[in-house]
Image (cartoon, rainbow, N blue to C red; front, side):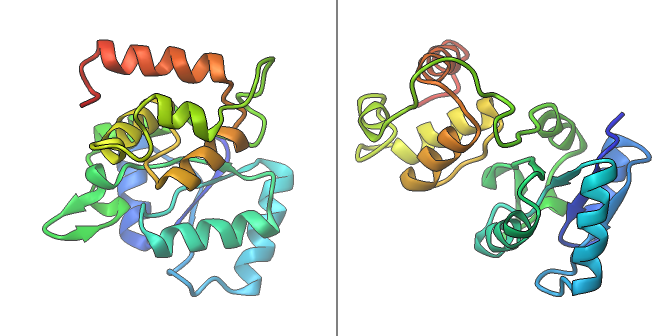
Length: 186
């Protein structure tokens, strides 16, 4: 069972996460309505039990994630792919399946959690792997991001997440091979 406080954007997100994961400690931000009182509570919980940020895979969700991360840098992260959060043109955690929620929580990321020996991934690596500046690069990044548990993002953000979560070049290339073998990469 997850012991950390899970931070989501809305009440519906919280209900879905509880249905998927059971009785977990959860708080919702009410979008940008994150008050100083809630920030203080989240910071206090980070000291005692840890915090996991799980926001929508859209611009607003990323802004909320970054806002929390700036004040609570030790927070861990869970990323949901846009494709898994899309329903009738609406994008949000509340649209994901229970299975997808369970799957992404199996890939909790934290600064340095994956850190190990090895060189960092470069922009040249992304280009060589077909993840930047090429046809279907976005789809390939999405497939690899889902596999690694870092979500889908543009090239710059994807490289930032690989670096931030300490995913080495060796792990990157190995994961790319595994995604290709699973037939999940276009």
